[in-house]
Length: 412
Image (cartoon, rainbow, N blue to C red):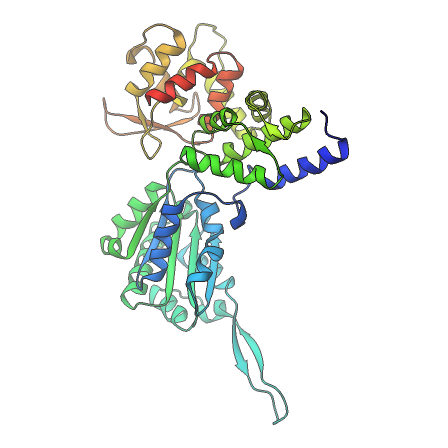
């Protein structure tokens, strides 16, 4: 049974609206899972003197969670809520960050008219002007204490702040706001390294800062995203197709949304409202084609070679299939088993150690980041979105098949 063209086009538009692979979620209705993290942030907002930092790998959905905090927090703030969300960049200073923050806050003050019959009006207070040129933590505290509703200040991409003095002053601000119990909650959003740096700069801020870890999504959370998206179309998905998308996405929301969207479009193109596993398999090539140019270029640079016997593509695939810790790191020993299975014979660490090092250098990337000490190095993908992409390429190039990654996932 085919779907008429007009109806299919309308359904494909709904599919595009239901999934958001290109941008963070900004609507509560499209957000799924993360109940533990939501609870921890709510706890921080409702406890005086408590602030929070959301941290985790890049691409795990930290910004999406930050984007919907306004909708999540309004019901628990009966006296009103003001949310100011700003993004940091490498040029930001302490002063520029707070000018961004106060530029997002609208505060109005009653203004009486001239004469008895004129109704009082309201004038906007420009908090940026109150801030002035010389900005200090105590100055910021004073301005925030003038605002009556509860204020939540979200500083996203905190890890991009390069200036150490700026980090120190932000830590001082959190400590000052906590000590004076100002009705304001600061929520920093960044990678794990930014947590270590902030606390190292100001140890006393530790007690005032609730550390909210955002791991990769669980299978249940990826299922919720897909099923929630398809229900809005409306469409359905078979269980084996749902499990396959969850396996391929490796807990990263971008690939959950991308494969969910592309699989649904494949299903509609075949005249069906139910997504099957074959639709997911067909969507793999679509996902590779839609990858960002930076991903394509980095993969090509890491794996290209004029010699057929080089193993860069296979070693990179083994890295993408290696068991990782909560921060995305793996050891060389974690690469050994997937590499041996890919090559169908035993490979020990010395056979691919050079490849791992090359992936950390300019000659092949860097596509991996290395940390630790000799004989105890750990590695992770600089861009986590590269990891599922490498697996999709491995499937497309027949280096591995679906039963291979199914079996490997069960042993991880």
